[in-house]
Image (cartoon, rainbow, N blue to C red):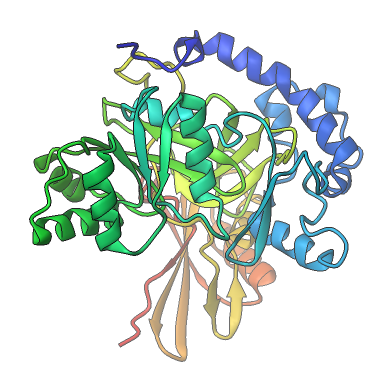
Length: 415
């Protein structure tokens, strides 16, 4: 059995990076020319000059709330807020809606969402039947998985969500090779089958997503003969990363450029440091350039033991939007970044909010080797100027703060 989906997975990392950077200028030019939103966001950018990660990092990050705001503003004329390069018709067979409401287009390319790679890594092969229990209405999850399965050469049973007894019956009678859906619903199905005394011996593998997949649930499935693997994908971007048999983090997909930045900024963090995942997709139909997912993760060192050479990430590690209300005013991670940028001697910082209701206290903890008198007062003054709130400053040595991606920590008591 072939280990890899295609030769792209085992490329020399330098070859992969060169290919991604070579494709980047054309994608940026495509976005500028055919996407009204990016014509504005990237106005004045010379697409031909964006041929490195350093150049890419100088472009603005577009976050999901900004995409939503543009969609809402133009809802009467352009439901996609000017981000899609497609128009209604044969080139766009489906439109989906995610909570917000955010509308996403689906193009006609085979494996549009690039999910086949994750399915292959989870053990699915051509000629198999897959029981797909992702939703088929409103959100694109069901179609994301179905189009990937078809590209892989599999047949799909569109189980969707709910109707647990019927799901068990279909599995027992059709005998699919595996399941795709949320891990919690798979557990519900297996529990229901147990209650009914219905064996499901054909279901030996699963690709799960959409929620946390803790080791305890993975082991629970394994005890019942199901090898479960997870993938990380979004309705905006398609597949971002997927789990392999090594079970050591998630390997990045071949069709995206991934950066990890300090929350509230567009500044890449050092390798291994937790930050927000920012993705540039090579999808010409929905060319999202430096799209902030709002999710936290970190790069893992070294290649995957399976032989796949792309970068690995730890997976989902929380949300990057740490906006916190203090004394009736919102404080954003970007404001803390604004403060720190004024002081090159500061390496990292975290704002800790403590106290009880109506008695909020702020402390800015900064990592620095600088001991010059007055730095603490200067930081406190800058914090007040940017946030309009007073706070204390504590200076600590580099490496003291936890590597968890938090820029603002809400440690208040709500009892």
